[in-house]
Image 1 (cartoon, helix red, strand yellow):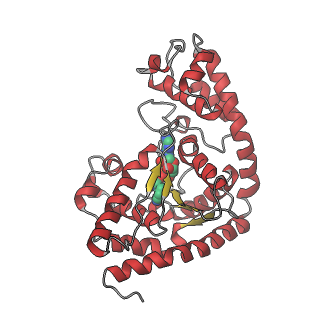
Image 2 (cartoon, rainbow, N blue to C red; image 1 turned 135 degrees about the vertical axis):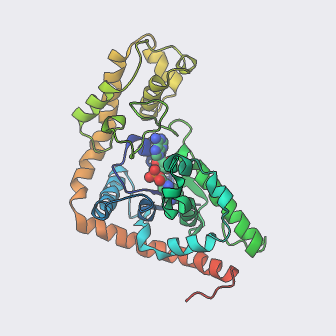
Image 3 (cartoon, rainbow, N blue to C red; image 1 turned 90 degrees about the horizontal axis):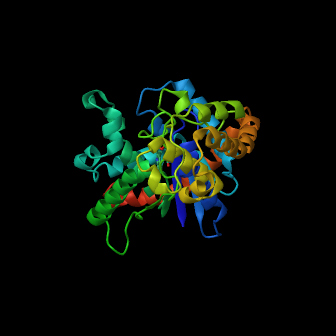
Length: 338
Ligand code: TYM
């Protein structure tokens, strides 16, 4: 088993990232046996696909490293690194570019959402972003990729690219790439904005009130939950009653994901109650989960030397893991690698 996943180091780690992905990374790391390995990385190369501040990207990469360790990623057991230190990611992206199809990339919903009506004005990198993402996982022969729902389509594309490359340039008995499986949590695959139940919680939302950051202090968490958009109805007794109430469903989903309960189980406890009593309960559960992460993050984030050392060690290991596949891809294409 090879587990590989990444996160962009722009902005803060938020509750959607945590419940949709990072918590699963930690669980998979903790369940690893001697024949398996986890590689987790900061997708700093992806971050340049949109306008960015170079100094903030560098600082964000180190901070996100601290945040991941604070969440439970153990650099002794998992390989933790940033993409930019491994040129093989960018190299393999180019090699895969011959197999990826314009039509496939044109269908990516993230491209459509981010480009909006101004496709012509977007960077080439924003368009080819999913090819780099395919390189990220194919380079390491990933078998399992824990992600939130929004990344499922990119993973399907990675499989399509791998399959076409294997068909065109390899034999069935000796494929160059493994087809990766996305691992999506059943309960918290898509955590929504606290201000709008039809938009996902996201680092790029201009409103800080739309998301809970993992480094928010207790007062901020309570304030954001109290101000979260809801409705005036009391909570129903089962999930069906939340079908047309996206904001309410989101808060109950978050509560359940944090306490390990289904939406129905949470509702059986809070049925008939309004948000005046549900919100403080949710705030408390959140603060309880975030307080230890927060404390570890604060202790780690100033130790730049230790964070650099973690990334350097991770990069050395990742480079070694990726080389055989990079060599095989060059060779399959009839290229001699320098
Ligand atoms: P990114 O940085 O946007 O998000 C990191 C992880 O968090 C998940 N996530 C969510 N899950 C549930 N609800 C939400 N509101 C929510 N918001 C984010 C994402 O699904 C993701 O798992 N392109 C990727 C980074 C990447 C990557 C990769 C991932 C680059 N290469 C290779 C996996 C494999 C991204 O921008 O994720």
